Length: 79
Image 1 (tube, rainbow, N blue to C red):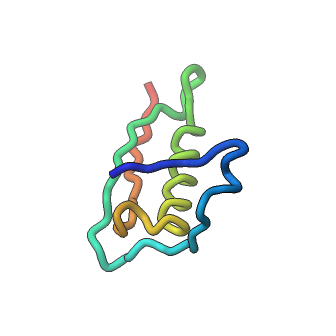
Image 2: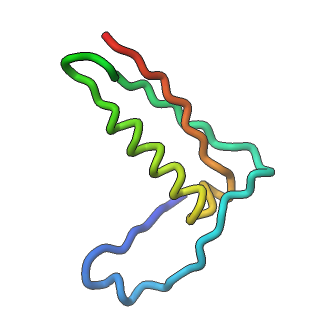
């Protein structure tokens, strides 16, 4: 699967599409994230928060991945 994104001045020349939600009847694609949070040094909750925001956007406006919804399984731990 190839994903393209237009940036800069050429954006106005791109074809606009209608946002569609992912098909919840299809089996989801599971992405697992292992992240360190809650430690005095090296805590990165922003990574998990950013991935969750991206997952929501992909599912709501891009139809998921190949029509399938994307799920995020976060494994958060400290050292």
